[in-house]
Image 1 (spheres, helix red, strand yellow):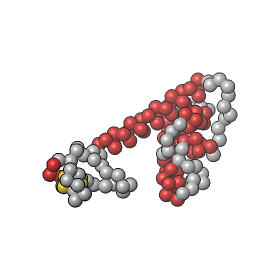
Image 2 (cartoon, rainbow, N blue to C red):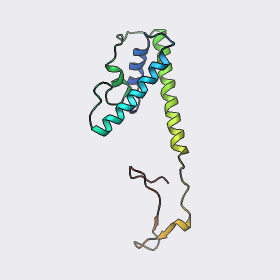
Image 3 (cartoon, rainbow, N blue to C red):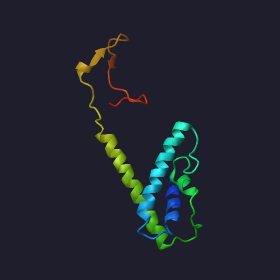
Image 4 (cartoon, rainbow, N blue to C red):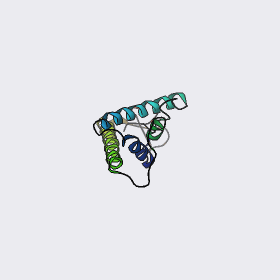
Length: 137
């Protein structure tokens, strides 16, 4: 899923507000999953998913029926906003825990460093490179 902006949170809360409170968490989880899949599709194919948008929450909810936004938020909109913010924060915490738990390596020891032919004080570090070309260390 793409970076979540305040406009995304407000659009999703506006979409969730007319729903019964018991249906909101499931509908939100489905919407977040669709936005995540749409982001994968748009990154791979280079264009937005025809139904779910480009991967941001606002584009995922744009094609769905929702009421027009009023001037003053009602309690349902505020409860929906709190639910959306909590779900997005939980998803980001889980993603951060996965990134940190993936085995970030410590600094290489002297045995892993070899002298470089470039200069006397330069060293080349051999470390694993990910698919995106970044080192994991």
